[in-house]
Length: 311
Image (spheres, rainbow, N blue to C red):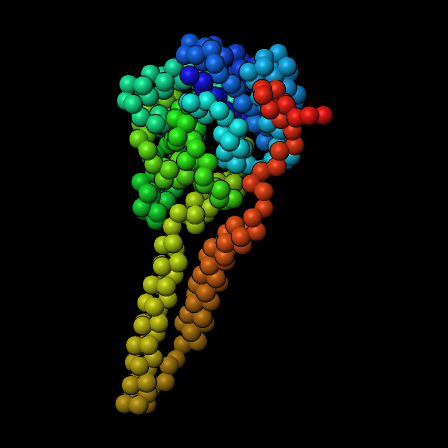
């Protein structure tokens, strides 16, 4: 049985040697037929050179160098496309998730006879705001999409070949990886894990907001339905209010007074219209991106393994 390990690199230089050694130790407890695939996602540090050195020392190490930073999720999917193992272990290289999880996941996978064993955190790491916002996001995306995505999923997961092949059939350019993992299906078993804080997160607030918007618009059309329903509600209320004003004018010769309320109403409705156009625009932009059929990622070079390029 061959086992593939896939990880991505971004500001990972200081962790690579330890990550490699620990992964090698763990995988050799299971099988001698394995490969370790490092995907360089445009890392600005010396991660690529470190990984190339590992591939020169060990012919079971492969390095996939992307032409630029395409994002963590796309880099992971690209790495998975290079795997050939019957089992595939996906994990981040920053050691927040322990490589020793491979043994735990493998034991659980063989015991449960399932296709996926994945890590979930008991509690989300970070400060109060990060935990609170993560909880709100999870509830919100599950409400809108009706997917019931597991809470606090980690990257670490051990997957069967048929699951990985099915996962790779998704070629969406705007990826929400947790949703893709979930809707691929098969028998998936969660295992509680602890993530260690070894590095400062590279996900800033604007990145998290972008992920949230992408997740919602990728897996739900409810925002569009809410726009329609709210628009119809405002229309009905406005119709009856206009009818009331006409009756008041005809029967009591009273005209509407109060310019303040009128201006506030105009600004309120105007704000709603602009917001709604923005929501529709997000959906249209996703269609625009998908229909252009641009490359998913671009590979600059591949080092080591059985995929060396002819020079």
